[in-house]
Amino acid sequence: MRGWLFLFHAPAFLSVSQCSMWNIQEQKGGEYMVNIYYMSIHGSGYKLSDHFTLKEFQCHDGQDFIAVDPRLVELLENIRKRCGAPVIINSGYRTPSYNRTLKGSAAQSRHLFGMAADIKVKGYSPEQIAAIAGDYLGNSGGIGIYKTFTHVDVRTGSSRWKG
Ligand SMILES: [Zn+2]
Image (cartoon, rainbow, N blue to C red):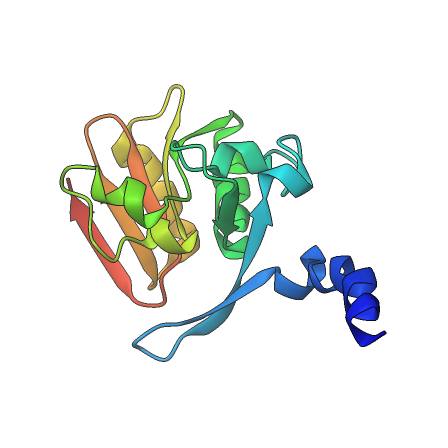
């Protein structure tokens, strides 16, 4: 009887709400929640905010699982508002296996934790986007200026670099 009950109730144990967050702890004291999603459950059109859908954060390897830090979405919304133009996400969440295939990517890249995005905005240079991101991130977060895009992340500490 017990076995049957378990089977009957099994779908409830697998509900999204029971496994929808990562608890991330950073070396320098930061502790926060990162939301996790499944494309097959939430759908590609799932809206994370006014201007961003889940699909935009999916790893390029097509992995169903997607991690997104809500603070990253907030930052991207702010950048979008300031620019008055769409923010294109070249790369959002990355699976560890996909990240390993990228030349020069950090082993502990913030992309692996759903905390980073490589972005571009039409009409703005990577330097200009970096300056705008800096206005919102202040003394925290990561900003990397590359030739054709800007990397932004919401780490607790502060890091600025040129790629
Ligand atoms: Zn990046």
